[in-house]
Length: 183
Image (cartoon, rainbow, N blue to C red; front, top):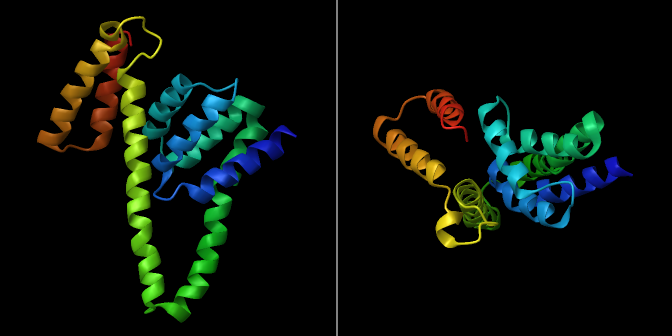
């Protein structure tokens, strides 16, 4: 039953997470709010690991979430559930696009997807920033700011913006800084 639950849950997530793997984050946050076996903090940790591993972020996040809930079979079912709608939609769209390639309706539909994807990605970005830099359980507002993480965020944001090096350099440096600062 757990495996079916994971598959159906991640089919829903995969069906509506237009814009890639990070667009799954708002849905995962909602899942964490409803489930007792998953927290927002875990999602933040999963996101950090998923972004530093090869492969699609959404598939990595779903596999890890499924793994947390139902071990190895759960990881497979969650990842399969996430990619299943995409596979079906791609097959259908590929067949239809041949016939309707120049259709104004098809062009309008794809133009409508762009703002939806931007909204989902923005929500995911703000959610990840909030999760990383804000401690919701702190008693006072000044205690709720994670100062070390905020400083690290600002430093890496400026470095990435100024130097534009390969992402693996920043990932490795952030991991090392996390160990050094005991984050």
